[in-house]
Amino acid sequence: MRMGQGLYEKAPPTGYKEAADEWLNTDALFNEVSFAYEATIPGFGSTIRYGSDTSGGSARLWLKSLNLTTEADVLGFLLNLTFDRQVSLTEYQTYLTTLRSAGGTFNLDNSNVETPIDRALATMLATPRYKYR
Amino acid sequence: METCSQCRAEQEDLSRRTFLKRALGVAGATLVLNFFPAESLRRSASAATNAGKTLVVVFQRGGNDGLNTIVPYTDPQYYVVRPSALIGAGNIGIPPPGTGDGAGINLPGTGFAMHPSIQPFLDLYNNNSLSIVTQAGFVGSTQSHFTDQDIIERGIFQATDGWLNRYLQAVGTAGAAAIRAAGMGSDLADSLRGNVVVPAVNDLTTFSFARLNSAKAPLESNLRALYGQDPASTSTNSYTRLVHTLGPDMLNRVAAIEAIGPAVPQNGAIYPSTTYGRQLRDVAHIIRSGLGLEVATVDIGGWDTHDDQGGGGGATLAQGARLAELSGGIRAFYNDLGPLMSNVVLVTCTEFGRTVRQNASGGTDHGKASVWFVLGGGVKGGIYHGATGFPSSLVDANLDSGRYIRPTVEFRDLFSDILVKHFGVNAAELALVFPGHTHVPVGVFV
Image (tube, rainbow over all chains, first blue to last red; front, side):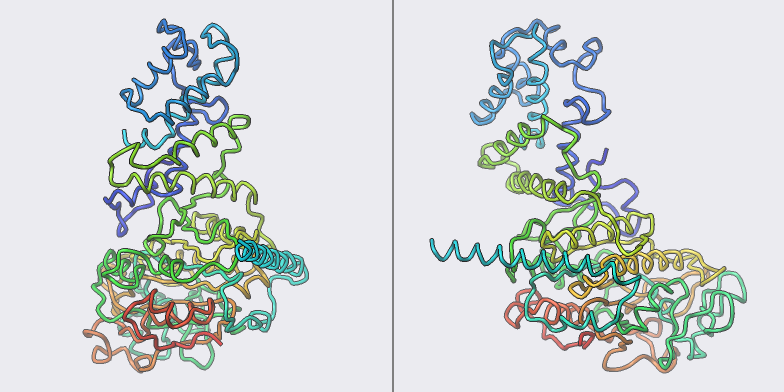
């Protein structure tokens, strides 16, 4: 994974610069978003995925083990975890739409919500708001 | 409205023409081996437009020793201050041409020789496709890596943006450009920083979200919605606007790079298997793919040879290895692009040269002027010492502060030559790139 400035690339005399915008560019953002995807989207990377020790990389089983049931429960829990529940209306609606993208009634017992949960998490971790955390 | 649609049609026409020209260029390249006559480079000399033109700026970070890159071997004093590397460990002098292992490569009629490690440049020089500037720099060098790199990359020390970014601001693009400028690497060269958002691109082979498969489209749609929000709604952080700008920028650049696939060097070009080599290869690929690339930067480090600088041949140490990488990469780039090089100029920069006299550690310390190279379309070729010439002897009295090669070719003039001759920049535009500077042409272009 390549986040921030390249390891070993800043040998003397160049050195690492300290200003914030030195660490912020298209490639840096690409790597941060890629990291979010590695942690959430199966097959994108080899990084250990979000979840608990026993969920086997399944965010759905992890959320179920926390006794959450409805999409409102799940979204509330995830937004509390990631943003202290401070999100814009656009963000809330984007996450809600993503969670509902499997169609039908949201049910953590149903494996068809696996992908929507992964994608909602991926979006949260890749969003501008998360970059400031 | 009518004007606008006409304008777009013109842009499309231009980019189609550019694309066709490039496609034909690629086809034509199969007809040449690894070389082609200098005349093909001259055809577009002094063009009055930036359409289809590219400038590649290679920065040798650390301060390359110009005196051992282009060697004044006919000056006996050179061997006084730098005894031949053949006669004793720690010496760095490049022996005269024809004297065996590690000897310089003669540049007939000039009194100078190339370091043997830049042999890949010899054909280009003989073909008048390579201009060598022996004493490039600027009066007022601080001899600090940081400050002098900043001065060269900003063009003006007081400026907060880079000279290449000011070019992008001052001159409009000739047609639609998916990637008008790119800084190769994981951070953006200071020369490219400024109001125009320029992407840093580290590696074309990994700069892709294709592995997301079915998740790609919905996740991209989500990110576009969230990065498209009013920046003030997500943070009070002072960089929030930049973060929100970079989101869609990143998605657009990734899409453009995904569309062209990985680089496939042409004409048998073999790049050094280093980060620098890979990045030059990627630049050639972006140029050939017709993404509208006008400006690119590539860095190569390792020039701060305070000790164990080495000589040539069997005495090669730090500098020779870097020179081989530098010239091998550029020669591969030149071969790879073939006839397309007529629309490309490449310039090498370094923040300063090094002390004329070798030090006690077999190296050299921070100096002033150094060797810069310019090659590509419209370049006149030859060796340039500036108005006051090269010192007839490297005795202390002829040196800057008795220790350094004096800068005689102002780097802003060299950059201005490129902007005027390659991109067809006019006086008003040039004044926006280098405000307060009066351009005295160096004359490296036809």
